[in-house]
Image (cartoon, rainbow, N blue to C red; front, side):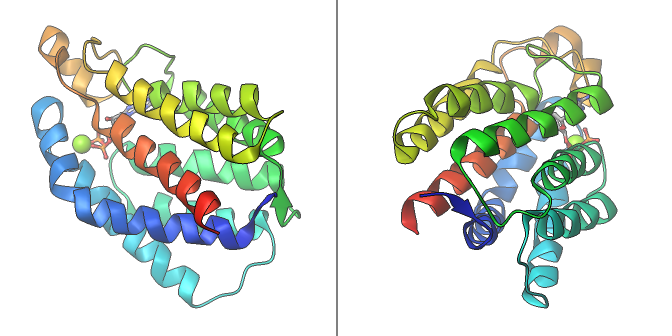
Length: 209
Ligand code: ADP
Ligand code: MG
């Protein structure tokens, strides 16, 4: 069973709800090592995304993710807006005219999105950012894509959760939290946390369809 545009929209709606629920928590995480705006930024952006999606019909991933990316880039301030915007823009460009994809194809497209994040952010795995969630999640999706798609998505979400938690002992090397130096150690990265929410919402949208 492929992943289709309807599931992608359902995943975005779930992501909006989860961000709404967790906005204070995300802001608390950002207060510890940043400037306490990640929850507010993401909440504002995703609300606007859902408003925009309600007014249109989408047949292709290209059209859907282009609109989502543009909205996030224009509404979400800070680093997270351009970074998530780039991730989704590249994803949409790669999937372009298609309306459904296998886990394997989606993993390839997400890898391109991640490449965009890493080149814009000059970030690598281990820098204590959203990359630490996305990279292992995409790898797990790709590695497990040969079996059942449900198992592949579960492996992807599990790897995302582990990647998020693995940011706790890391020293921040990119973004605002890097100004904290050693004091960033012992705190979970807010962007790695919201990236886990995004991946888990995609998994849920896939599983519940
Ligand atoms: P800002 O840091 O500008 O206040 P946010 O608080 O919304 O923006 O987002 C912070 C998150 O963005 C961080 O937790 C981190 O995961 C991610 N991030 C910041 N800088 C980078 C970067 N250079 N590369 C990848 N991710 C980054
Ligand atoms: Mg911040």
